[in-house]
Picture 1 (tube, rainbow, N blue to C red):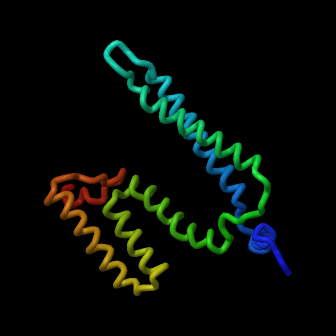
Picture 2 (picture 1 turned 30 degrees about the horizontal axis):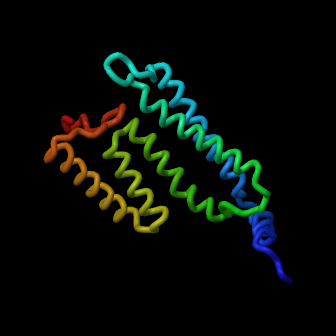
Picture 3 (picture 1 turned 180 degrees about the vertical axis):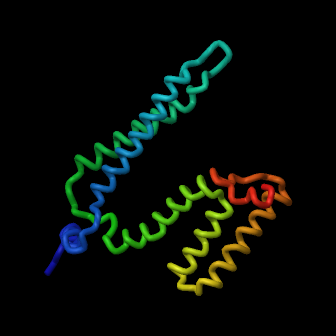
Length: 176
């Protein structure tokens, strides 16, 4: 009856179907390694040496990309060579909760490209209020429209800082 933490975590990973810590570390290390590769590639394209009049455009990004790449390789090495503990990074039911917020946020960001930040924000706020907050639809729509209208007035009228209105620009009907 004297179980170690590693054995308990292995049992938890097996029973919950969660993501192991090792897998998460490997995926994150590979992701950042890919980012570093893109930064290094573009830095070389822009020029990463010291020119006659100072550093070229890719000088500082090159060294940042190099640092990220080396750090990612070290993290990947550690993840692949460490003794397997079976430690759990996240359980399946908790991952579902994270994705319940992350996926709508991704759709919101993509929606901004088409209908602009004001309409996308109104839809996002109303959707979250109804879906996760279980507020009545009329209350959700009113609050989301008021918030988006306040953002519009603050940025477009008072500060005169235009925000992105999207490919279809639904605000063109009122002259913006």
